[in-house]
Length: 220
Image (cartoon, rainbow, N blue to C red; front, side, top):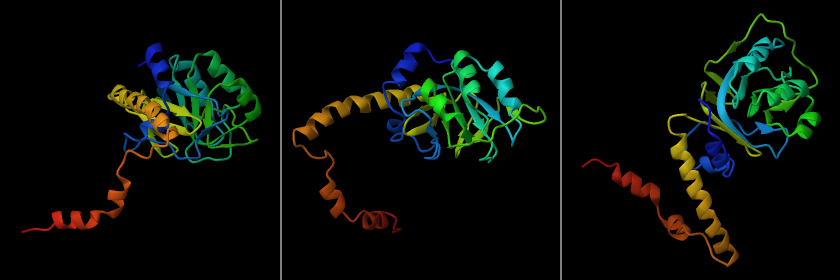
């Protein structure tokens, strides 16, 4: 499932953190960050699972994934071998992919940062993989930095991290995020004019919520 240009443009006007208000899961751990902090990406996941030093499955995925995909890589817990460097990232960019997400390290960080192509990873390493061809899988459900990722899930990332959205209701969540961004325009003006939070924090603070809950849980 490819995202239309209009949908991509709408995503890029909001932030992954805004979706965090409306979902109960799907976020990757905080260490997942882009090499270039200005990077922002969104697209359907094309998933890869590679183990240790063998990155053959990634090279296969780079030739099979649809344009506009985010290549999401499960490294099976490896934190040493970098499977993406400058040349792999450049090839992915030239293939028209939206970005890459690695549950593990990348390398050639300065070159990738300069390119601006969205590469998200959990670290940087000088040790790289080789194309061996004895292991690996593609286009399957995986785990990436604490998030379950299925082929076709919507992967959205910026400087704050990465969130994974189900393809069946991402438009509903996008509308909520857009509404939140619109409200924040007025809220900024409100704060700059000396206004306070529009939540009755004083009443919440002084309300014994647990006592109310315990009372409601009592049986007659």
